[in-house]
View 1 (spheres, rainbow, N blue to C red):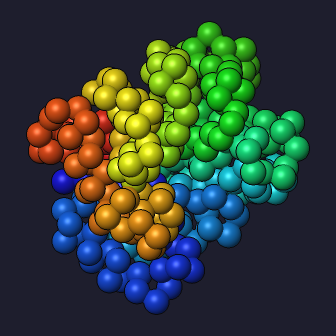
View 2 (view 1 turned 60 degrees about the vertical axis):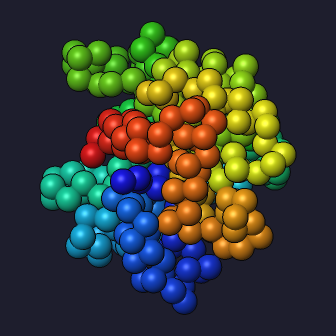
Length: 282
């Protein structure tokens, strides 16, 4: 059993056969799919899809990708907070994380300072709501990690949330919990991420012949610090390269992890499920 921790099946690429895609994921042995919002519209679509699912198979997140960081407003964040509170009060618990959000200094046309502002607002919401953060990081390693550390225990922004709470905050408010999704940076930086207590998640990229350095990250990742994802419809594994990616293909990423780490596939699946359920609170 596996969980695709980062999928965009609410995107138009799946409009013609979404039901079939979900069925193939179930047939492949997936237990859940996390539909990750990356803009106001896609976040709303992810939440709607998760709420309409009656099988406990689809879950949602809300967030703004660094490409859309200019769209962050107090009104939008307040709306998301209402959704999360209502979701918790209903007992459904379908909105399970904030993100994807983060920093992209490679392709995003949004000013880096505006990206940082948006990222900070997302982390703040996550801490207040007791939800983890799904982090998009591209060419912004130290800034991403630095901001997250500010919301870790002892960090100044975490202290401010505790102070504003007016309660015994350190016992009631957990520090930020985060995953660097679609990890693609260096082994040196990965070690910093793990040391800070954060997770790394791997996609089909690790199956590409050119991804030797990334497979070194996989080889060294602590057993309690990784998850798997597709980031579909993008980044199909090598066996499907150039085609639309979909959640069922996450099994091939797990197979590559087993190969690289010299583990049995069932052991990798068991570890991934344990890590994923702990991270998202399933």
